[in-house]
Image (cartoon, rainbow, N blue to C red):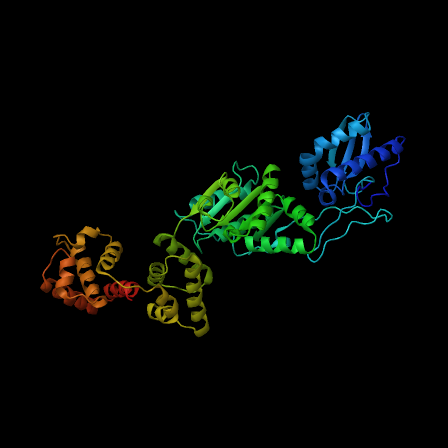
Length: 477
């Protein structure tokens, strides 16, 4: 029997005490409706159905786990009190999820993308339907390119990667909930979330929902407009793992934050796993409600730091190897030095180089790289300083920065120092005396000698010339 479908017409299971049950249930429904109001009554209580009676215990059936848990937490005690008052023989009330095929099970009202499905009238017999499996592709399609195998791990992201792996292997039993990933644009947050989803979907043991915070908001608004908010709530709150990307999009959207907060609580209380990403840590997301920030920060917060030069090289080497196009190491070093803030842009630059090589059948060279990527490189250009030149040259030749101004004359130190002086003359507008002062107050004639010596060596040694040219291209404005 489904209560609330019609206030006057109700059907009850046939039993010896069916009449007493029917009369008692009518009174309980009437009291509940008066206590909670029309809207709340129709939202939460119209899908309860009478189940079997076992001694002094009566079972009430609900169509989903979420509804059962909600009714149990919000109305369980009151239902027990009302049953005991109206029918003293009933001392306990048990709430259960109706099984498909159960003759006492209520019909399940399910929602489609376009419109909610209305509950059927009690005069029409309709076979019970089981709730749909919530899969990742029902919400937002996962990108098959983003897997753990294609994620390049380095020191800046190894902790976030380990946490994501753990969630993918053992959701809901990892010891932390939620997993909160944060970091700048293009550092791999979305990649890790798609990788978690792909791993879980492949295992086939859990249901997964992944969507951006923006999509969550649009779905919620659509559910309000179509009067299907219950179906929206049930769909998301019945999954085993919920992943929300770019949570910062909810800042300033109070109603959507409210809905996400309740969804968050319902899933965590039910032991389900939540994964969230944002561009800042929970404590820094000003504009989110304090209670939501607190809940987000109570799990595992994993920062994805800005990439290092070594990690950028590893990423480029991995992508180049997968493409089948030969990309010289000097080109990879050049890109890793020039594009430092965004892995997505770094990969995009490499993809453009590879596409150009495939289309025109030309080898990838430093010259071609600078020509093909002139717009990207220009966006990353900045005014070069002597200090920056010294730092880059010292890193490249693996010497200490202090050696640039020291009195050491060993070739391993003197040669990089001369290269730095040469590049300072080529790339800055500083005079020779000014350059000399930056290198330990050396005389301007020392700078002149360094410039001519480097130019001479570049003509005689192609490998040395290539190193200097690489440094120049990385530094030039």
